[in-house]
Length: 366
Image (tube, rainbow, N blue to C red; front, side, top):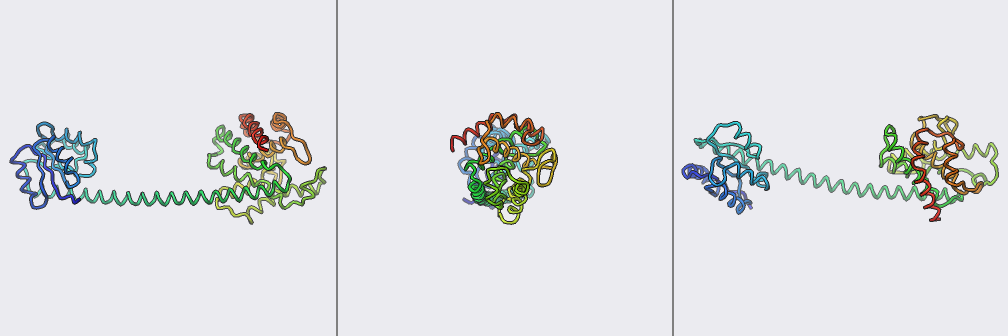
């Protein structure tokens, strides 16, 4: 419906007639002699009203009482209100503007000024509403685009996860390892990572980063694909050359991820490459392949390094029996399985029982 009506709240009949005559040629006119009558008229004709002229002093309900009542509705946001007053008071003007009045008309009336004030108020308000509609449509469009992007990202992430799971399952199958090995590593990494995040904010870990580290950890041994079966499956002690070849799975894994594995998530890609190369580095610098020391090793690689050792100790392999979880825990804490950061060990002690629960969970599933 077209907004072509002006509503005049004015108890003085003469003043009201003056205003009616001023706007008769431009608007349909609705009149109210007091605030209560005007509110009833406003409610009934809301969709057709273009502007409201509201007298400050009226019986039954004065102008501010009307505004206070309408503050609970949407009227003041969709229709311009111009207040009529015979007083020149800063406090009155300030109070009106706080309620949402867009302008003032002063008595005695000056016809040209009144018409211009009303014209400006209507024009400005229509422009404001049009801008709000444009912004609303743009926001709706952006929201739809964001939803589409989220759906696309979710699908791409699912493809990432399928690819990572498939590759890691190939490694497990070839190594004759438990089919749950990769899942355990991922959950251990998340569990230990949350403990590190809680205890040591300086590592700047977040839940999103930990999720990516978890998925990246699944590819930590991808380089073993390039190691001959005779060495991977050898039950006896490895020769020096064979040990060096086994160690090369770290560099080969990083190279494979960098050159042959396509992941759309750059952060997972970077974590995976780093973890594959550095999950056998040790805090004292005695690891491989680069002999990194201390926090030269990324926190992601440090986390996966510790959980990989824990999983190896508590799992049966072709060359060893499984240790009890408490024994494995003590071996890690005492440095029998390589040196780890004191911070990482502290975080590990906080989740000892959680690790044991995860281990039991996967033993049952197997």
